[in-house]
Each structure stands twice: as C-alpha cells, then as structure tokens.
Image (cartoon, rainbow, N blue to C red; front, side):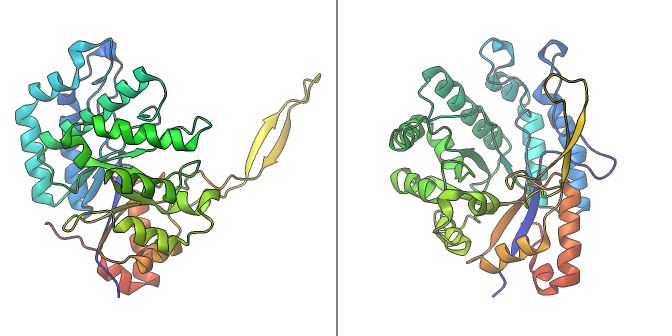
Length: 328
C-alpha cells in the first residue's frame, strides 16, 4: 500500500532567483524578527506556487534571540514586538496547510556537562517553541534536536539529556522531536530516550544507514519503531538525504617544498548531496507504515524537491500520485 506523504525542504529558497528567509545581519546592524517575517512572506508565496506544504524555518529567524549579552534582542521582546505580524503570517501558513519546523544548530546541546551551555541550549529550544506558538502552529510543528555529545560515557550522556528534557516547559516538551545521528547516538539510543521521556523521534534515514551503531537494525524496522513514537493524529516527520559521492581534488604542499600537488580525495559517506537519489526516496516511502512527511535535507533545497518529483513521475507514477499537495 502506498501512503500519502508530503515533501519539504529547509531554510533556503534557491528557485525564483533565490529568496532570503531570515534576517542574517550582524547585531551591529540592528537585525530583527520583523525583517525575517517580511522575508518569509514572499518565501511562503513561492511555496504555494510550487505546492510545497512543509518548510523548516531558519535558526536565525529571531536574530540573537538567546544571546546573553544582547538583552535588547531577547526573543520574547522580539516576539512581543511582532505579535500582529506573527499572527498574520501564521494565519497564512495555516491557510496554505504549511507545516513548519525548526532545527537548532550544533551548539544546542542539552546533555552537556557544562551547565552554562545547557542553559543556553534550553533557551534555544524555548525560543523556537515560542516562535511556533506565536505563529499558531499545531502539534505537527516540531523543534528537532540531536542528543548531543557522548563525553566518553554513553549512560551518563543519556541520563543528562533526560534530566534536561524535564526542565523544559510543557510547551517545549510537546514541540520537541529527537533525531538519531550518524555518530554516537543511533536509533536505539533515541528510542531509549523516548521510552524514558515520551519525546517524539524524527527518524533520519541517511544517518541510520551511515551509523555503525545501526547495522543490526534494518531501516524499515527503524522507521516503524520511530513512527510509533508520534501521537495519533500527528503525522510523523522524517529526514532524508543522499550521500555526496563526488571525487574531490585537494591541494597539498609536501613538507620542505614549495611545490603544490593536486591529490584526489575519496568521499566520506556522511555529507549530504545536492539532490536526492530517487531510489532512496522510494525505499523510504515503500517502507512507511502510514502517512509521512519527508524533509529533504539536500543542498539544492526547493530544486531538490522538484527533481525528486520529476523522477517519481517518470519512474514511479504510483508514488508520485500519492504526494499530498492539498491544503489542510
């Protein structure tokens, strides 16, 4: 059986000549959420034109919102100042049936032994929760985060994550989704944290396939197990990318010489490719136990969505027809 699904992409719009989606100016230039919201208007128009109903907001949508030395830019002050604009843009997103999400960056680590880093990371999650709440997003809108660091002690690292999770507000806990990574914390680890805390799991297909810790769990089984962590009525969200496998040439200078040599470098498996290999998407969709939303983590962004759709229409028309592009 082929289940309905939606395709989305993250942050940058490369089509339509390229569209910025957040205010990335330095603090000296007075960046503000109000400018990000102005930029998101045309971006949402573009999403409507290309029938995309799933989009990840930039982590800089609220610029410097949790910076400890810039209280004038605190996220609550920016959100309060933009209450009307947020309500209007949120209504637009709901009218489009647009599922929004965020994914704080690599420095949001709530399982760190450093209490200051944990406090900053918790603030990042509360900020993104407040943003999605102000946009009037429903329970599908997720703040996706990784477990964090191993710190040479897996049990302690997992314990710290579970303890930090309990310090979050109820709203943040309801928004959070935990992603398996391609490093120390595979699907088994995030499922253990789900068991302990109830956190939803955003399954990353490429991370699972490239994690040495995941070799004993077939991807279809991993998808089914993580799918079941989402509550009834909330469509599970997964991430998909394909490996970048291009040959690269590096320049090296032998010690003691001025000569520069060009050396071929074989690719690592973990970096994301510009586009999605259609068969990777097909494998994921054929394995889905029910309706699914797929965030394409491809460098080509909206162009990768268009490429994936064209490939499915040509090679797998039944799957192409199952994509849910309707407003909900």
